[in-house]
Amino acid sequence: MNDYAGYTIKWVTLPWEREQAYALRRQVFCREQGLFADDDRDEIDDHAHLLVALGCVAGWHDRVVGTVRIHQQSPGVWLGSRLAVDAAYRRQGAAGADADPPRGMQRARPGLRGVLCPGPASERTAISPHALANPGVA
Image (cartoon, rainbow, N blue to C red; front, side):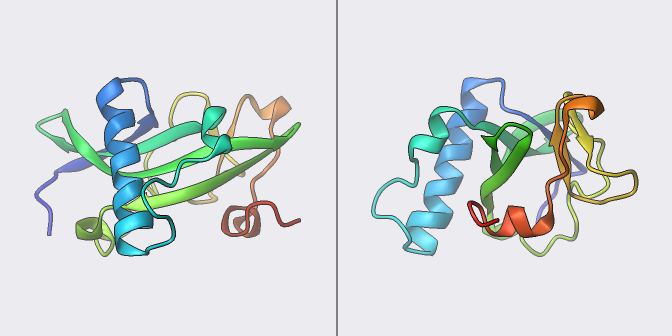
């Protein structure tokens, strides 16, 4: 169970956010799931953008409780991958599902929960749930 009054979903901008996001991914993908030996990072991380869910205490960001990387697969096609959520927060409900999108991101369609697209509306392509669940598969 957590004691956070709220969450902030944002692009990584600070070194501690990036460090905690990668540490969370190592925890989930290496130690818990055993998908990778020591580190899950790959060439996609060289150009991907990281989003983090931060637990907030009295309006202050406390720590990373979730992360996902977003990368452009081809012009106008953006994918999310390596979604990781701290084990203590996996059954907390829909943290961030109704939160305002981070700056520079917009909902794929008004009212569509949890699907965000980078860039202005004139340049974006909706990310389908299939694309998020199956990166690299058309």
